[in-house]
Image 1: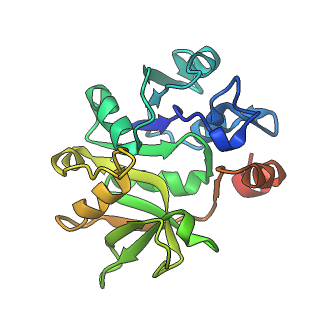
Image 2: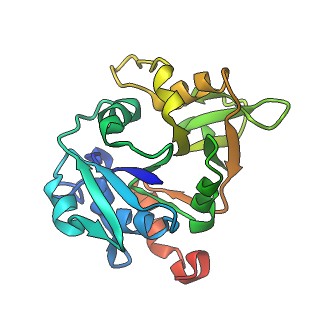
Length: 230
């Protein structure tokens, strides 16, 4: 299986830390954030596709052509036009039937990502005290995904999309919604996909998004050995 990891973001809200580095390369307890994402990948993931853009040489210089025994390919010079756009740019590199897509600037639990071995379309979700900041996930009577509502002012649920997925090539048959700012929105695309076929939902054991300096400090206080066993 392949894993796409998104590392192209500039991270404007994280300045001055991102003046010379993309946000996924910010240091957390001695390692760049994205290294924790790679370290959490299970053994059945044998190739990593890193989507790069802003200050991309910092990523490629650090990880090279392989890391932790996994081959690495790069999709370079990707413009910041949303996750749907990043997936489209990575499509020519995809050879596995199913694949993971993960943010390079979040911390995930290895046991959650290991669910990808089931090779079924899955959205990883978590409960949030601030669901209006994320895509809110609604479930159907079978507990599968029914819809994803992007950053609603009045969230109907506190169950949010973590931006991590198990996908297959059927997703490319679903039109990509375009947001008012021009970004291609993968989350809503997956929500529309769920109207055509079952998309499973996995409740994450642990998820630390890093979108603000406060969340970065939270990550720097995580007991990595306790959470991950590392």
